[in-house]
Length: 361
Picture 1 (cartoon, rainbow, N blue to C red):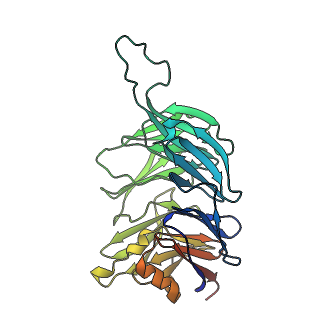
Picture 2 (cartoon, helix red, strand yellow):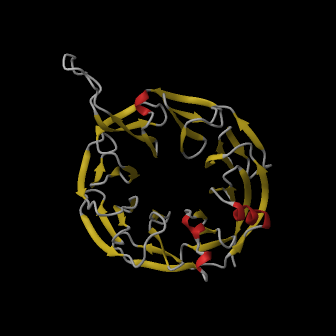
Picture 3 (cartoon, helix red, strand yellow):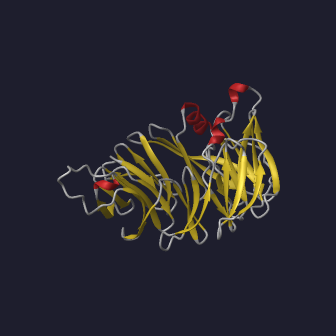
């Protein structure tokens, strides 16, 4: 059984830019006016942080750290201490794509060819092209650099994968060298790959085809046709199974797959919309896990749908507190879980914290 109770509501001084769960039972929230910390599990205090002015783009990390990217480079900021831990001052990073990968940052930079006159000597450095740089999160030092097409980098197992428009590449995260390459169809819409067990799972939204590749060799293990299109990227539960969410005719269903064989362990319809105008757009947000229960936010109805991960059984929907439901009626930009509290944030900064209790029925 799942119960929800309002813990606090606050109006934050600015527009929401990002939100992340932090350590010590709190939520960090980035605003256009700076950074704020909501003490969700203690006295619900709010304090401003002036480590930076909130300008530039941000990459959210776990815990109390965030990456701030500006025209002059990017920096790692410790929000709890209110200081910059390290900074890389280089205009090459102004338009770089940065993704967290465990204790490293995967940074894609593109260096355009330098325009020179016929009489000028060609530049010695830097070499033009697209490069993946593996940056140590603790120090900001570059572990390695390798030339790759831009794409999405995901960490899993003993290495990482890179999904580009043309191929899936297994990368040795120790040195950046390719371990294997798998050519992919360009007539596809590939979801982000997910590492489960000793395989990488990849889904094409156009063909509704699930493909599994051996993480060590890149060999194709199996293909499986999905009955409905996905509404979220596949992800791995703590139990090691792959979870997929499909949506068709207003019905959102969850599937648990055995990644080794592609066999469906269980499938449950989370909710069904009785009217077209009440489609479950809120379930487009990733679920939150507390103990062995996945929580799904249903914006249209103002409820949370719990799903038991062991059995795949969908529990009775839990109505949000009236104050939180009113928040959903206006808009919801982000939600996250820290300890036993859910933080719901509106685009203009109003924050609602709801305490979650999970017990026996």
